[in-house]
Amino acid sequence: MAATGEKRWYIVTTIPGHENKVKDSIERRIESLNTQEYIFQVIVVEKDEPCVNKDGIPNGKTKKVNLYPGYIFVEMIMDDYAWYIVRNTQGVTGLCGSSGKGTKPTPVPKSQMDAILKQAGIVNKDMYESYLEGTQVKVLRGPMAGSLGQITSVDMDKGTVKVLTVIFGRSQELEIDFQDIEKI
View: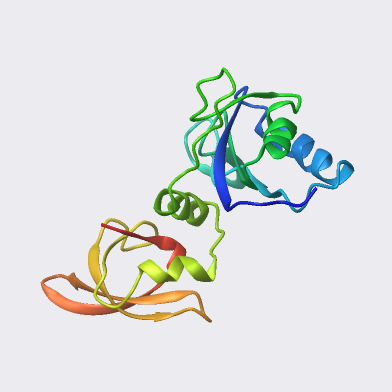
């Protein structure tokens, strides 16, 4: 059976706390059923958060925290077979955008999915298409978090952008990791 259609991202709902188990189950089914041409990526968006002791002081350890409890993201070509495989995986409680009664789920819009992928640390070359010189952006992480600025150059090879922003009343150009900005 050949895959036809467009590769898109979909949101799969799970029981909160079981996201990684469901991800592993879907990945095992992709492998065992040989459906790599239908289902491409399965991600759980997590970040490292510092652990603190009882006094609230960081102890040098980190733990993974799920940014979207109860949700995983699956990149696939939505056809009856791929849809069947995902929705009938143990631990899957549904797919967002499907009202049941056989209606297929709606995909996540590209702009929203790009922001989610950037949170997960996944940057694709095609994401740079909407971040051109002159684009207004907000810095998400680092010492300049919350600052607004304008892109002056993009370096896809290094994965950075130069952003012109105002610091202490003066214009300053900063080099920032691509995944640390978002369009405003």
